[in-house]
Length: 216
Image (cartoon, rainbow, N blue to C red; front, side):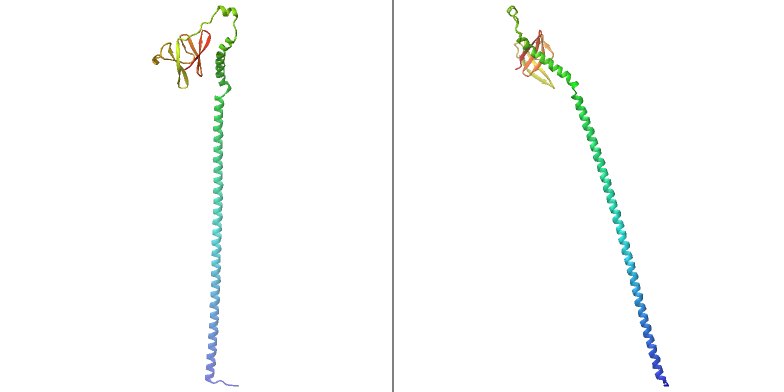
């Protein structure tokens, strides 16, 4: 058995203490490193969770924005369709009103008086021609002579007032416009009734005869 002396035992104790201190330092360092790694891991998880939360929030906002855009687009489309339908209906109503007014103005019944008047004028104009085309009996032609009708006035022209035409006449032998007289259709002067103004011809009725006088 070897007996240790005092200095040798003290050195061994100091060595064991140094080894213990080193081991404790290593354990402490290991614990510190593990603690830092755990803290880093937790921090990473917190950061990842925060990023996920931000991404989820952004996705929600994008979805809400897309829905709002779609709703606004649908509402605008419906409003545009409503305005278009309303404008189309207004246009149809206006066209129907115009068509109804035209039909009322151009109804066949409203043209009957004008047609009858035209036919009467045509009959009056054609009456002298038909009468002249009939050859009277020879003995009547020999015994009765038709006296020519000479108007007691001269025609100076036609004057338009509004939509109505007037025949301007002067007494025979007169050239003064102050003595001029205006005749409208249907009026008479000295037994001569103005029946119509046909272009450059004035048609007068005199003793049952239709006489046509040239308008200068």
